[in-house]
Length: 295
Image 1: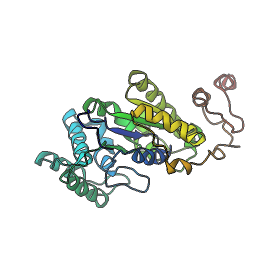
Image 2: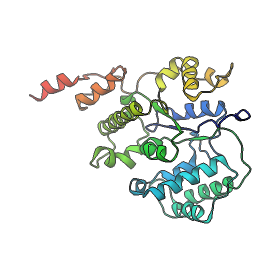
Image 3: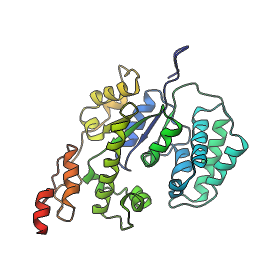
Image 4: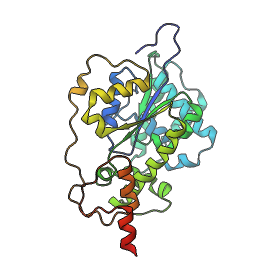
């Protein structure tokens, strides 16, 4: 929604989380609140310009100048009205010029073209932002260049995520987060989830004013109440009617229900419980029982 006359512009918004956490619903909600998230989206409402500009293992080694260039290009595409200069245009085309896991050049190049075209189009004048689950991997560096950014981190039951078919992040970032490479197993997926959210807890402790921990299961149980909390964080009014909220479904049967969980480290299961999630798999051990089993 356009900013009031003479009012400072509303800060941008970003949405991320471990893949499959429910970020699409949150993105659709934020867009319904008037946040422009770009014109090049996939079925999951991902802002594909972010994917082009940041979703590569090389981002972990980029210089500050290289990282800043990607932030500037993303902002230009989302805000519109500021054509990319020669250096930024070259950077965008460079990032589209080499195949990546899951994203060949044939997929990347249209993203680059649409970003360049968007930057040259008329400004929309409203609040802007993006949704791309991998945002959490680099959120601390993004804040260096966009300190006003409000980040929404979507969280879903760790064991349900461990048994999700979406393990793309584990395959891409697992070695970086866990320190070793390995198969995309449920045990390794839960370890990735635990280490990621432990890091997110540390970040939100220092950035409570610009980071929001959104429990997807809580949103599904009480959509209107949780949407109101989100609006308070974003400092925007909750519309009197949001048809999207009427379509939110209650959480179903957990994916891990009835599964033998004895192969999972007790400390990881305990961390899931510490965040308020109930574990219903069979033989689920606490850290204490796991330690006893090893003696």
